[in-house]
Image (cartoon, rainbow, N blue to C red):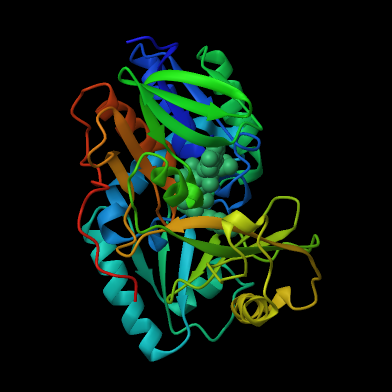
Length: 365
Ligand SMILES: Cc1cc2nc3c(=O)[nH]c(=O)nc-3n(C[C@H](O)[C@H](O)[C@H](O)COP(=O)(O)OP(=O)(O)OC[C@H]3O[C@@H](n4cnc5c(N)ncnc54)[C@H](O)[C@@H]3O)c2cc1C
């Protein structure tokens, strides 16, 4: 087969870069092709929360290992192990919290329940209306705006080539090789990995694969610098809040509230009708936030499939092609699931099972 590369990785987010790094360790010549800048997609605009408490039960083993990889990266990604509380303000939320956290604890997350009095002592800046809370000492956060710089340095150190501002517009086959048209260049590779985040459905169609991928438009906001209010990462029993105060005093607020727009239409837009309840919930949890001004709110596109588990495995019906993406909390598990994907492509048995992109999905409801 006439090919310049062992594999072309389309998408320079965490998933694509982490896989390319594992492939290089295994001796494969990879090239990463990115339509913008490395790490400019969801991987570079997310809230950076590394919380085991907001992961789905089945993904806890992946999140634990992903967390450990971010911890290893340390200051280069602004990693901080702050611990995290998830709060309930009503008896119904307390019930939900107990149900969900007990399952995550059974799956290996070191989560414990703490009394409202204990929380008040440890985090006096939190609301006094808490009726139940859980604590995970492993929770923390990193700075997602460092993703591009981090992976660019790692790709360079591993001798992996990449192209930026090179959107892939067409993928053909020639004598078994994949012929990838990107930014006026043609790249020939023996294998193909599509790691295109919220653009994955469109990319998969280029190789004749239909995936039920939709884009979520998540919102994040940051406040001006304030006095010390809270040390841990804060979540809410419903999963609709993530909040952390950075060492410089700014507070980052997220929780998956939906903005507007679509990946094909440029950048998404913040929607006031979801932004306001997000900020209201944040200042309910941390009353000292109320006087702080929000200096910026933004959105990013995150891929989703109906069962909310990743797509990670061989592309159905296309020899030599692979698919990786789609998961809530993908910043946390990204570096690890990329490694697993690399194992699979290298022909090795991954340490934990992957998630067949060809599995049956229920319809979107
Ligand atoms: C606003 C927001 C907040 C989030 N908060 C958190 C959080 O706090 N904690 C957490 O764990 N997770 C969080 N997530 C989820 C997490 O960011 C994502 O799951 C993860 O970054 C996905 O990584 P990826 O590499 O699959 O996608 P991306 O980072 O989006 O990378 C895909 C890349 O593919 C490129 N691409 C697409 N099509 C093409 C093409 N045709 N040619 C070339 N390149 C192409 C894109 O430009 C993009 O750079 C959040 C997501 C968002 C959007």
